[in-house]
Image (cartoon, rainbow, N blue to C red; front, side):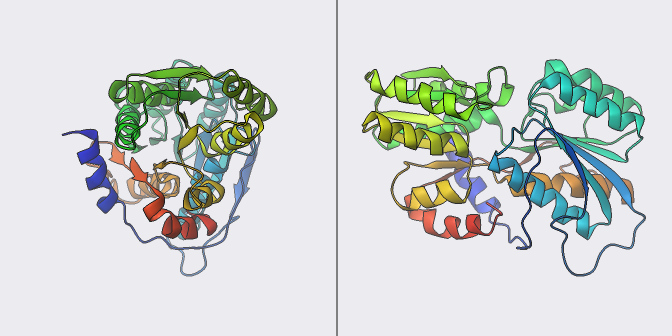
Length: 331
């Protein structure tokens, strides 16, 4: 099955109605707990459990705001005490995981972007009897560490779908921008792009320093070159790329992975060529739900397989509807 055939089937699969509730924001590098963004209405009467979520989010990354919102809204519904913590460094993420294992939390949700740093800690959690679910990154490692399942998109397949979209839209040469060197998911995305769109150059930037990202992208565009499209791997990078394009006086097209309200609107306005959406709200929501289900009834979501939340290619034709949901904080 081609990645485009897979993508078309996923678009229909992912049309899942979502409960629109209150918004929340991420707190990079520190831990929070409680019911910020708590859902209104009836809460499960099961015994409260504690679930810790550890990500590699940097401050200001709106993608993780959406993941966290999904997690918090499910936690509120299922009487879960959700602890959220993030740090861009793999070694610090491992320390957070070790800390939660020592605290004997009832479940762990982890974005396994740097398996070399995290796998030992995750295996130790599983061996301690703590259910582990991975999200977003680590789709090739979740079984090896003994996780219940993984919620996300197969990153290389998502890259292949993006490369096919580049070809379909008639582009000839691309720059694929990786904002965190060593992040297995991001590397796989650009590898997938190059698989189906061979004339692709990789450019590394550092999303922990957004002014330097804009400077690097501006310099690249000012230097010229044969590329007629730039692919970014996150919404904040796409926004910065649009600023760099304006500063450089470039006419390069820009497509991106991942969505927030701003880039959804920029797509609707015609400023972006496409967005690859992996539905981060579902990743957070379903991850917490799967821990609760495993605790409540020993249920295994996904039947021993990873659960796909993407990829879905969103073009300008669908942008207006998607932008409406993005404004509500769930896309």
